[in-house]
Length: 310
Image 1: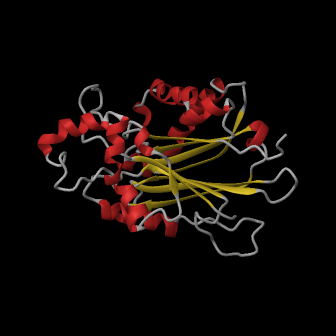
Image 2: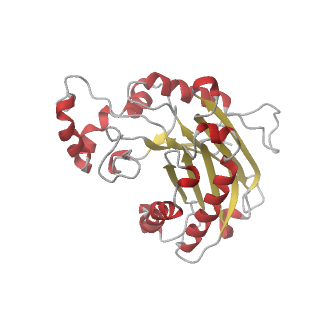
Image 3: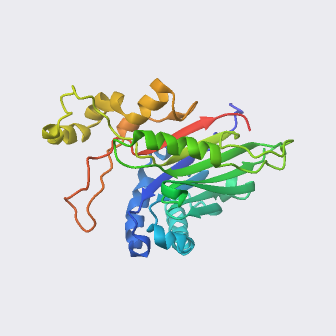
């Protein structure tokens, strides 16, 4: 019989609310979150509830409302609803505790821990944020949560870091996205943990486990010679992106994959899942069901993970 410790399960959700603030209907959030809890692929394999559940938001509310401090009341209402849904859909009636929440203007992050595994053991909790975009006012940027889970043997255990980010939009602005990412790496700094021998602040990489996710806005960038490159071929491109085989054939043109794996400009040492297996996201016109604002992003909402030494 194996004596290996059970690997913690982490489930992550990311949601761009399109600046709806309090206008967003609570039912919209339930409809988005509940199916994720029910049909998550790892839950189907593991048949147990996640140890950690992280939910990130982007465009939580317009910039002027966020700067006025309204973000905190909006995220409080979302917290109550999300916690109720997580516990409602837990396979064995598990209970959860909010480990930490952090919000900066329109970017927010809630991290929950299962009470019988991580929730009641998490300690040394830290939250940080940084802003990107024009004048660094916070319309783009990142928020982070870090905490330590002591070992069952009383040892230091492991450190978990979650970063939810919103990078510059629009396909041609790739350089701005890369600049945003590098700014976040350099400015999202955490105080040293009590167990550290150094007094210097640390980057997001000073952790056992790092999860970086959000509306990263990396797009599909086709070369001019590609058969789908012209605007006249947009219907064929959308049709191809509607199937997993079509997305797999186009994945080599994903901006994030190229910048990370080929050019090495972003997400050094991090891994991304098989993003082409997920359907593309669409930015619909508010109140419409058949009109959308732009070409569907291929890997706009990405989750990259890193495992290192704490």
